[in-house]
Amino acid sequence: KVANSIANMICSKILEVGGYVGGAEIQTEAAKRAIEINYLLIPIILSAIIFISMCFYDLDKKFPHIRQELMDRRKKEMK
Image (spheres, rainbow, N blue to C red):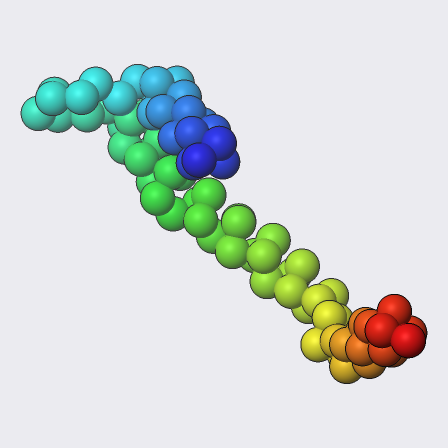
C-alpha cells in the first residue's frame, strides 16, 4: 500500500511538473512528454533494473543447501 501511494505521488508530480491539466481538450507538449515518461520511460527503466537484479538472483542454487540445513536443525531439536 505504501509503495503504491509513493508511486502514485511520483507519477502525479511528474504530470504536474509537465503542466498536465486534467479535463483540458488539448495538452501542451510538455504535458504529453510527462505522460510518455510515466507510461513508457519509467516502466522501461524499472524493468531494466529488475532484469539486472534478477541476473544476480542465485537463491535457486542455494535453496537445496538451505533446505537440508533446516531439516538437520529440526532433527537435532527433536532429539
